Image (cartoon, rainbow, N blue to C red; front, top):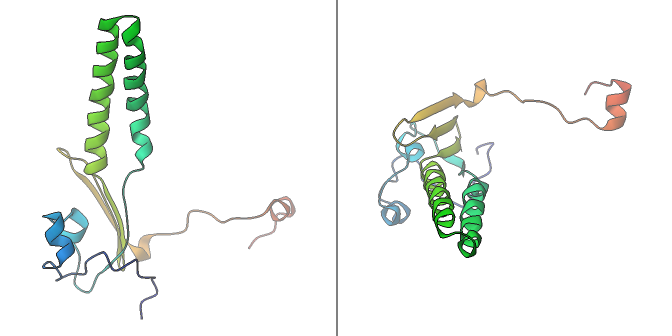
Length: 140
């Protein structure tokens, strides 16, 4: 029994490349293709959709400016769409995952950057203390 909870059985273990989930995707991601023997994906995440807010706002302002000035509206909409393309590429080319042995992060399309940490190297960042405990200076 592993100490990690299993997440919906949608992620593949090493050697399960003929699964229907992989066939429907058409290719393996960075995390799936770099699993160690006897390693399974516990959790996988993407960038948050908030990265599209800035570009969406600029496109909407461009659309509303259409009534005032067509050239300004076209420029703003074009800038917003260019920012949306950049955010979309960042969104699709970033992978974050936790496996039974490592934490894996892959970011970038043309200039790919990866970070792989063994779980034993990951330390807790901080501890949660209540206001009363903080005021007392109590250690947990």
